[in-house]
Image (cartoon, rainbow, N blue to C red; front, side, top):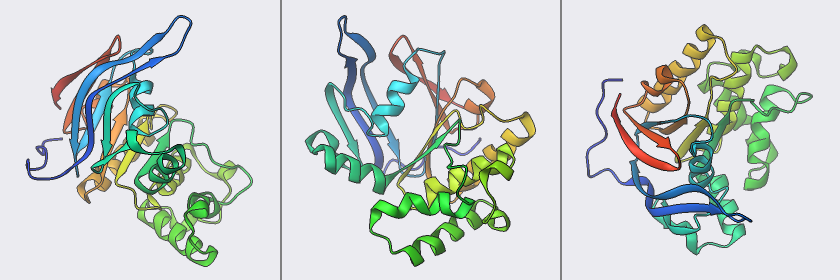
Length: 235
């Protein structure tokens, strides 16, 4: 992508301040060495590195699935280290949308039901959940398949349902973990084009990938090697 990062005055969605994570032993395992990171609202950032380098650890920290063992993580200016487990869970549900390589759809629920389930614990009435789910499916170009079961959908369609589920709660951040890993090249390109469109509409997107071609879709790229994060430069 050729667009530069947002202007410096744009507020950060993500701020890591010497954040690190060590998994308890014995022996202790270093998942992420102390690092600083700022991702501003509306950026598209990719994270690359070999298997076991620390990409999943970073994803877990950014997604509030694991808390740093040292340093600080601010999400939308909120110091997540000061939150209780329940508050972290609520913040994750309100501010972060996840897209995974394996889709994680319930096979016996229609596409719109899979999307609506993301709103179940947000206090949204059922009639509104369905309407919002249908809108999210329309947003990803899949309104015509809203009533289909995942088992009848193609891989690309299932990933679009997963993206709709991630978007339905209007998150601040879209975290994607190898979103094209289970797709053929043509289908993967269609998913990447969708991410480009969401980014162009103002969504903050972070994509974890081992694919250099996917990494180049971002405005800038980070590299993780041996638990050390470095800036890989603009794409």
